[in-house]
Length: 51
View 1: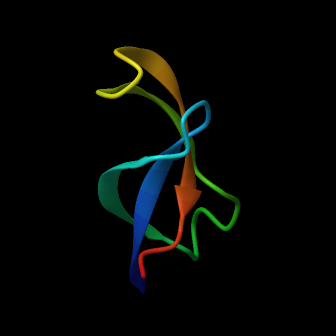
View 2 (view 1 turned 90 degrees about the vertical axis):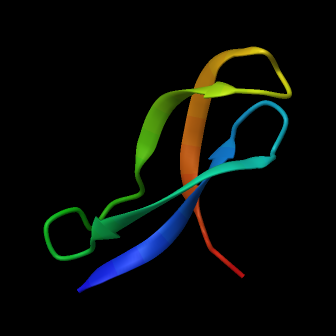
């Protein structure tokens, strides 16, 4: 039921975090404000696929 996802920075497009989510309770894409180490600031991170 819980799928692994990666969080991708909106500004630099780098994969910074991995987490899991329940697709049944949260069917839409996850968007969080997280710290990006390459941008050196808090940016929006969207859900992406893990290859």
